[in-house]
Length: 212
Image (cartoon, rainbow, N blue to C red; front, top):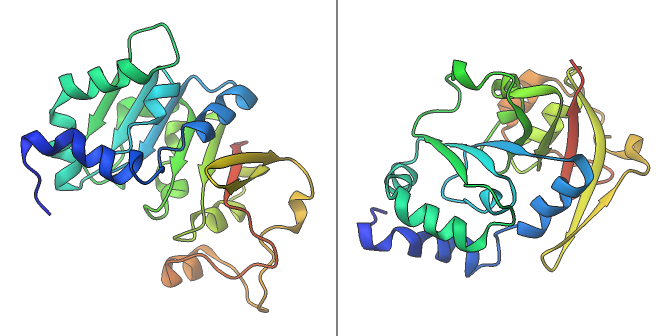
């Protein structure tokens, strides 16, 4: 669906504000618990709400509507300024490209890598995270499952969502990512399936720390 210039901000409101999908509470929770200052969001589409909470955010998406959206920089900055929760000037950058292609100037810079509904970001974009930084992932496309078998990551928390409210838990982490079926979970298998598997216990979202 092509969008006209006058519809740019309307696109954000339709997909995120009107559907209560902004997740501002989620990003606030992560900032408070893990002292997040900056974030990188591959496959972001037009979800600019992390920039309401974090002073520096990099967005990466090859979608043509996302590219058109982020060209309207003045209106985006005005929207962020009207919602931001920090005193500094918003520092946002957008790369209109496939996130599978590395961006050298971003390597090792970020406290938070966001992976939601956009594929296997935990692997190809891991290099953007600082060692000690955090990956926020859901398992819609199997990315949380992939991170769970990656030795560079350690599961440190789960998040449950109910009516737009998010609750963080550090308990019983070893009960997650146990498949219901007797199968060997490998990177190759997850890439082939391309979606989240059936596990004995599930959360809405998972927080991993990059340990290597």
